Length: 215
Image (cartoon, rainbow, N blue to C red; front, top):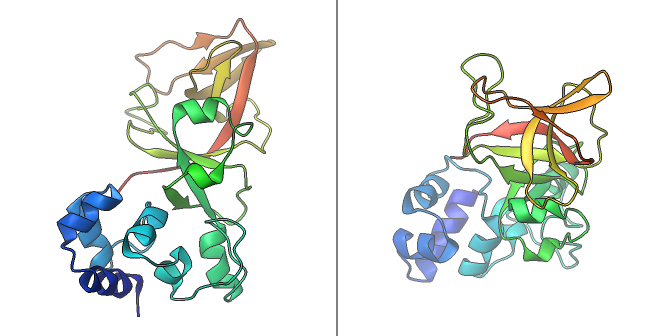
């Protein structure tokens, strides 16, 4: 039985329409339809979906369940290949949470998760891109609405795409790190925006390892 079949089976048992279940989970009916017809194999709101249909996230994703669980994103049962599917999920957090990450990290508060590369650290997270400062007509372009995977455990170097904030500022920004003659700049990919010269201490929250469009 596939995840599509498991979701549809549990929804039918509960007597819910696609629209009703989608509303409870916080997704569109079209998103739920993609799950049930097999186009979406790893739902972003796996935890919320499993809660609403009354089953383990592990069972919903893999068809297996465990007795002991470390966190919503990891488990101790199943084959190594199955385990990696859940172990590699990282939370989708808000910009406000990112500003204090990982000091105020509390994984139990996150209902949205997304799969990540196997080498991703436990401190990594996904963040939604806001604004068009990283949208470019040529070269690398990461438009508004994309999700970026942020890795706090990697030291940033010149030329890396980073998420950062400046001393005394709780707002985070997503830019390219440029270090020139000892001066630090946060450079947008969009040529219509000017590089930001950082005069205060910059707090690099993490290096961006991946960008992904939402379904």
